[in-house]
Image (cartoon, rainbow, N blue to C red):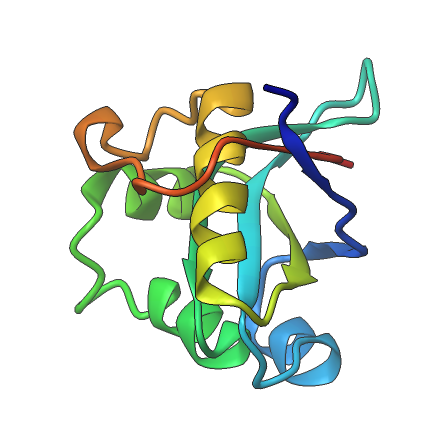
Length: 127
């Protein structure tokens, strides 16, 4: 059976900070990726991917180092000039599938490989 395909409209490559979240990120459901822009390729080396019902709120929560439980993500955010990209995805089933596809595509070091969403097997555009 062929995989279902979903086209995501990615926004971002913005410096990951509160000002850019307030300026660009809606309070809408979606998926996101956080990483470091590689000078050699111009591509984002993704350290973490996630999904949420409120992109603006969730991306801000990751920047609250006192309360962020993912120590790997905090370490990367403190050490590197991180950037983020996001795509709006309204349906939960599509968010699960998109996050799953992102995890398998990037194998981000700050995501727990044992907690990959149990979503549909879909193809997405990653950039």
